[in-house]
Every structure is written in C-alpha cells, then in structure tokens.
Image (cartoon, rainbow, N blue to C red; front, top):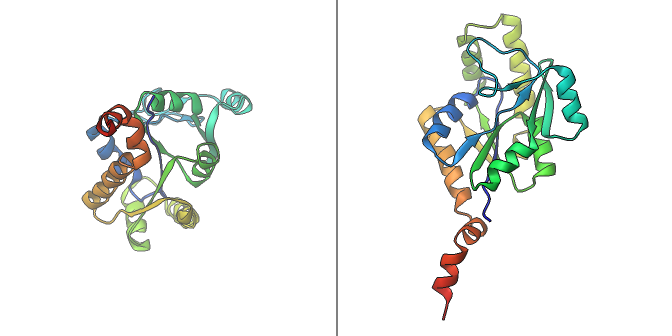
Length: 205
C-alpha cells in the first residue's frame, strides 16, 4: 500500500506561514492540514475540530502520558500537540499531511518520523518582520518586542530543516512551496512504490 508524505512547516510569527498554507492546501486535493490539540481558549470565529481540537490541560496531559502525540510543545503558556494516530491514518490513505508547528515540534517529529520533509519559512528582513507584526494592530509594543525576540530564537533553527523558503513576494513563496511538494512526490522511491504495477509491466520481457 502506498502512503503519503508528511510535511513539517515552521516559521517565526509574522513570516506568513498560516496565510501561505491557507492558499496552498485548498488548491491541492492530496494535501491535508493536520488539526492540532491545544489548551488555549478558542478565539472569535474558531471552531472545535476545524481550527484546533480544544481540550483542557488535564486531558492534554493525559494524552502526553499515554504517548498519543507525535509532537507537543508549550507556546506562549499554552500547550499544543499533534495526535500521531490521526496523522498516520491520513498518510495510509495515500494523502499528504502538513504539520504547522514550531521548531520544538519539528525536532520531535523527525525523531519519531525520520522520513518527514521539513520546510522553514523566513521573512525577508528584520524591518519587514517588525512591520508585519506591527501591522496586525492587535499587539502592544511590549508584545511585539517579545515576538521579535522569539522570532530570532526560532530563526536560529533553520539549519535543521530540509528546505528554506523566504516569504518576500507572497506568490513566489507560494510557488516555492508547490515546487517542494511536487518534487517530494516525484522522488524515485515514492514513485516506484506508487507505480509498482506499471513499472513491472513496462519491464516485463
């Protein structure tokens, strides 16, 4: 049975990761975005099971203890995690899964799922990142400075990833992501598995 590709996408806050994935995934029928579990409260417009699986801290910690997470991390005093069983079920159906997680989660995924393909999204410059964070109009100056510090910390881990994409021009960054997805699907080992019957027929004497 063929299986899909697990993509891990990370980026500092303000790099445009969420916007890029929202543009990418609906245009590709084989891509699925993994829905994380979190202990944070839903924001206006968010629905349980659509944006996140919202659970309380006791339930989350019970899942950690049971080893149910492919990865989990603490971000801004909240807990986030990816249920391993649900990811593997989608992959078993020959669909590709995208995990939108930070470097801590990405490191855990690589340990338990070494064949995962990782992509790091970076902003084009420090001024551009600051402008994007300020342009949201939702955060105080203190929060923006904290996010800038967190962004530098996140950026220091780009060397752990397979691909590095700079989100300067949105459409170009989106095209780069599409190219990565296409290239990984066309790897010889994956194509050999998927096209086993056809290749056997072509090579038959």
